Length: 233
Length: 233
Image (cartoon, rainbow over all chains, first blue to last red; front, side, top):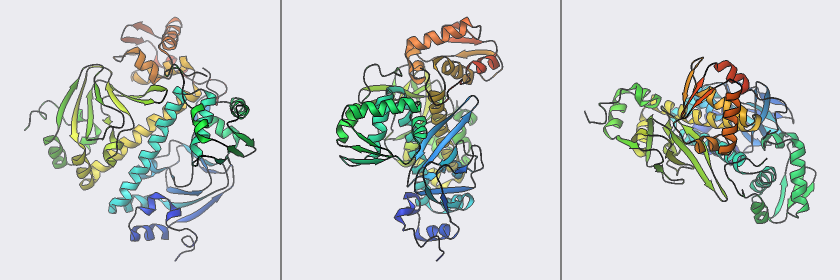
């Protein structure tokens, strides 16, 4: 059994490999390479050929684009996500760059092997499409978020979505500038939004950790109000 | 040969069926039903089971969501698109409602048959994933658009993307309120943006038609400027 398999239980590998047949999974893991990145390390640049599928085990990966005149953070992926599944399945360049926003562990699977394995294993093919659909859905949710919520509502929504329990702590290992760009605002606007929520008693700020005493109350503060089709700053 | 096949050449059916084997295509078209919708007709509501894959032959389909407190237009699809491919391939409810924004012709293929056909025809499966990737990419582009461009730049970008030639006319068959919501602004902001571009000589407004004398100049007006991570109103 190769060293790459020893530390990682099947479930830790994420929904993609969990859905594959045991033989498919074993064959893919034989070719897998572990990747560990420090915060700020580039995994691949925009428009790079998708030579590998990266399964995110731990940490945070930011997907960004650089357009003429402006760059932005498109999405932040977390454990369980497959980076970048659509480009790998189609053998196309990635439309986004990928960078570690926190200390991050991944495993790299050769893209060609993933495509061959999916073609031969309907469970894996279905799971790959489910990942594509999930990432499409994340983008839809973000488009709705940007169009219907103001800065404070977006910050509240982002934190409430990271918190699964009714109360607790949200870890924000990413640089604040990356979170601000993900939320479509300046770092100054994010800071104002977070302090406004803190002043309202909805959260307590402790550096990279945010305590949320009442998730339902935070979700109420995330509700879009008024004219839904405008973008109220 | 059923009546539904006669008027539609294979190319008109869009990239999905063009990529299928001739037998697969014939079998799917045997079960296909033509659908014609007037402007404003609902094709299916949000969270509806994806019982059919709709291939958009002509017209315009708006994908929208209704969140607590706000509703918005997520995307506008045009001829060649498959509505809603991800939900059909996975047998899941559609996360968006679909409505005709102009007189629209589609063909409806039973979702179960599409899934069975794709499982047996690698060309069709690849084309289905390509459609999923295209719709993901459209959402990425829109997220970048919303984060980096102001209202006037977004309006200019939208028109320039609809115009394929260096100069010509852009048809806007959709209600202005739908286009404004797609662009994340109020109808009043869209009107101001269009008149500002017209005053600058970049376009001429004729009701549902917009003349663009110089696409390159319009694209320059669409370039994001300055602080890329803010959303300059």
